Amino acid sequence: MSVPVYHPYTTKFDIEIDANHLDQVLGPLTTTNAKAVADAWDVVQTGLLAWRTELHLMAADADVRIKSQLSKDQLTGTVVTLLFDQSGSMRGQKMLFSAATADIIQEFLITLGISCEVLGFTTSRWKGGRSRKRWKWRFRPRNPGRLNDLLHIIYRSATDNRASTGGWVYRQMLRHDLTKENIDGEAIQWAASRLIDHPANRKILIVLSDGAPVDDSTILENGPTYLADHLYDVVRHIISDSKISIASLGIGFRPHDFYPQSSYVESPKDMGNALVVLLESILTRS
Image 1 (tube, rainbow, N blue to C red):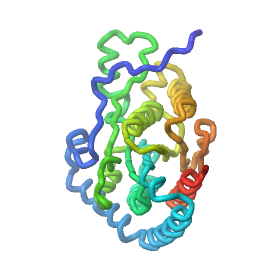
Image 2 (cartoon, rainbow, N blue to C red):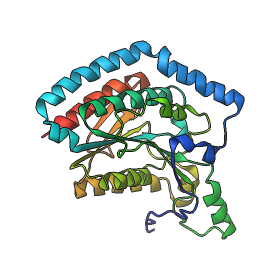
Image 3 (cartoon, rainbow, N blue to C red):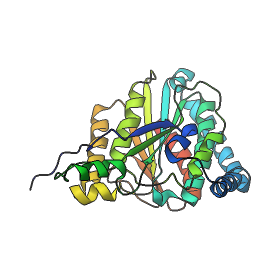
Image 4 (tube, rainbow, N blue to C red):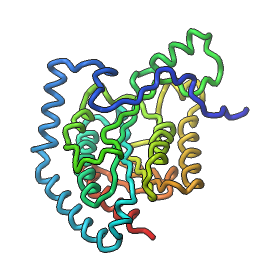
């Protein structure tokens, strides 16, 4: 039996949006849910104070080492994209530490003089959303391809030249209604296309995820390895093209099968330190 070529059934319902405008997609938070987000953000800002202090100190030490090996021109000629998996399995502690890590690592990179982009990916609906409904209306053709509605989120653009955007935007990561499915291959293609358009000479993409791509609607109609095969093909293409250095940080998941360079943490609280180590390794590698 031939393997279906990866494609979306439709892109009509896919959304790329600034994080500050998520209400337009997800709807406004109820009073109860808004309080839950506020409480979670308070934990990020004050409840993790010891964790944040330790990460700041580690980043400061890495800053000194990196600046001793790279010139100012090399640093300002570099752009780094952090691409966060925002699937349902990331809900809770993983997303809490993702928000805190994004906040601090953004500042770390900006202090180095490196342009920084922070993106997130999930789907706007469960169970295929409007894409699956359209497929059903059209009598369920075989091998339909990707059957869900992508939601790609921009938390910080690499073209943002401000010294810091502040951490407030990462509060949106803590919404209970955000995390759904993860379609990694197309998310990486999206992030890579944004990097290619950036004028920096050196481009680095780091994917932070806790598992292989999963979207039940797509897998049910195309086969169990459909999304994973596409992720593998996308990463292989980026490697062969050699314009972007790609790596991954796995959270409770070892991503070695997909990426040429990767790191792994068992606990979400270790994300920040592991990301600093990974970034230093990539940046100082000749």
